Image 1 (cartoon, rainbow, N blue to C red):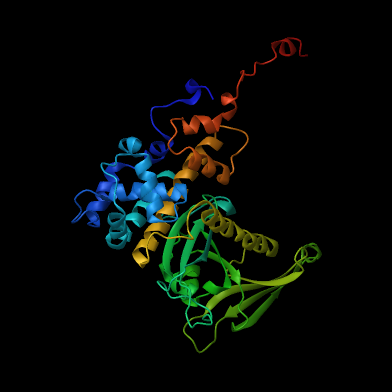
Image 2 (cartoon, rainbow, N blue to C red):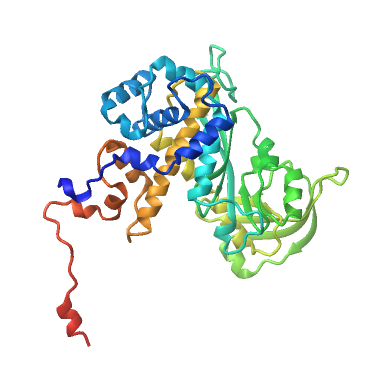
Length: 407
């Protein structure tokens, strides 16, 4: 590729770091005392080091530090004043506050993707749709308590469960809570804050009647699946048209959810029984929305698969199988840095997609960044028009002759 085509004065890694304001990093470091007792390896140095590890899929401290030492001549572009030792990085992963990295992720998310308004959300269903689910990251030590049966030697592999809330329109986490894999899903439901008018989709493992009742009073719609052990009483059988029956709707019932002797009683709930012809399975959807049709409720729940694609994207493009520490703090820091790296790639990808007809896949952009992290190439301009780098490339000219004689 000719040097002058996309040449720029900053490597790709520095172009990504430009999305992170240094003033905000210093502000959060002061807030969480992230630089206390640190002489050289500051919070920003730690952040850059962990992002370097995430982009390059480093599997050990030695691999990470050796990679930094090999490119030490370019570290000045990144703002790093000194290359850390393995012991220094291991100690920082163990001691530096995780809240520094989590707050930085939420700040970047709100700045470049958008924030959750406090007032009512209006617009299309997709603009108001939120999904909550969890994914488990398996560990090869008992740092976090795992779930399931023990192995033959009596030991269990640890596991981290990441409870995640995403807005379908953004495809970026807006709420993340990390905990042990043995923790119950519904325990985090009271922490979710949703604006009025939003629609929440969740698996039946998140069914918690107290938050569900509160959301109904706040104007938040929710769609989930019915647990077999749930207690409900039939109030009315809603009619199902012949067209809905052909589409797979079996029944539509208005119910009262919860036992009469308990103080939790979710009114105006519905149970929609739906038969999926593709899978051959029958599903029972539970919702508090009385306006949407039965097919709309079924279509909303199908959108839940989008968060599974997000989990797949994170696990395939970032190092979440080998961790650079055997303590909870180090594991959480690496996960938060993977989320920050994912967000940076998403920002660049979305900006490039807005200026070209054919959209990039996330895996292609992530692979390009991983291979050319230290290359002096204008990343955004390359993604907008990569054909310009072809040998003998010529700009396409409009056919004025056809335009002239067009009738």
